Length: 314
Image (cartoon, rainbow, N blue to C red; front, side, top):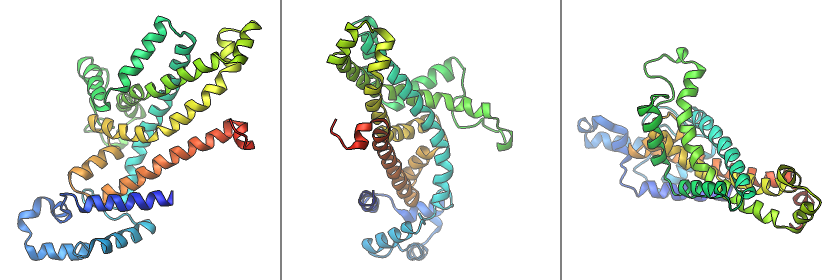
């Protein structure tokens, strides 16, 4: 993780410094015409932007090590505070979408494998192949038009009702604004888990011990429960944890479509408006988020499979 973070920090800093973004202009904002060359030099000197790039990187990295990610140019607040506040909203969105997509994808994969060759299997495969090639933002726009604009069942966007004080916002209001983004992420995320579970269960059902169980009279749900569940659950869980990176990327697009006040929307704003400290901070945080997801996937193998704890080959 340490090696990964150092590489990501250096590459991200290098890309941002060589991008068309002018941090001084982004900091000045609308007052650009009223700021003269001398004031620009003073701002550059104050933020250390007039120093060599490696010196800037060392100074920034030294501050990051101590937990100081800088100050956001957009929000005029510490980057760590902005990330902490926005990530709580994103975490709720991603957690519900992650659980829903994992459960639905696993069930669909099991049903497709148990009904292999039938119209149910073909329908599930068609659904998964279609969604696997569907962009998240397009699905979000489609769901937004159908359920929010045409039917009017849900609010069009944002995390809370517009014009309502924070203390007057109820839990039901937050849930109503959360449903469509969660639905978008979960619908797109079921494809990989469903297809992988289907193929894995088909291989398990063709094994010798399952054929022996069939010969003893076992069939249907009990056959799957006794001989197939654990064998297909572990790969599905691992794949679901490994999908943290895709989940975070999808959340960025979904939050932008629904104007949901999460970390993804803050990342887009930081990129468009040249907020370099916030952009670099979100890159570091998203890297940690994906790494933790992969780490949990590895830990789940040791928890669920005794052979991994004993060090035996599978």
